Image 1: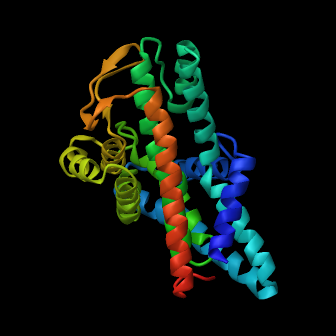
Image 2: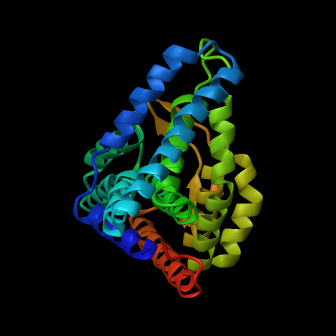
Image 3: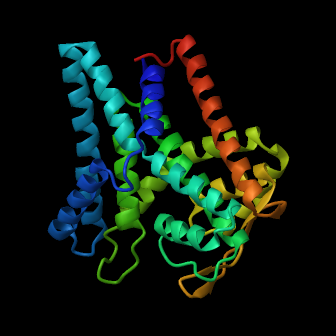
Length: 308
């Protein structure tokens, strides 16, 4: 039943992609704002309490709802599984933007590609060249595919019902809203959100990077992962970008023109300069990685390890 629910959610995501900020994300944002207003005194202790309240509350609440629906009728629990998993993914919007940037670059519409990248990534890229736009788009696709698909699937399979998917989504959202903030007024309130998401993502991100490596140039991917991931500020993103760049045979990272300044970044990956052809290869890599994950779920289901 897990595999069928996952397939239906993925199909729904392709046929009807969610908006950039779907309802569940807007609800999380609103709850996070209220928690900050209520609990933020700049201390790490209150940040830990607020994180546990939102993330564990959402996780346990989802598990309880799944159990109640299962007791009423397994079909209701199955529909709940599919619906919540669909709402927790949201890669369709990223896929749409990546495809539109790819098409714009192929058609020679660099200005449109820059605008689409700004919509997706934030910032401005008026001085970015074709290779820079392609490079940043590939990086965004590698990280988004993990955080909106592979990481969600990992926890969905591990915990009962869709509670794992909700936990991962909530932890990821609070990491972005609280953990990434460094302003003095916020204090240490977001420290636990950052640490907790890194812990929850430690295994999933390495599984995703391993699948990227196996589906591409394995030797180069592992070399880049081991030697370059330590150079990037966000370790999880670094592992995905380094292994993905090595698997694809393309150089990522490096300085880029962003919001009127040149942002210095370390070189990631290995091979040629990023271009339109590498964007097409990225699509192939992500689809192959998804098929491998689905195949592994089939094997686990046949072994009786996955079947709820």
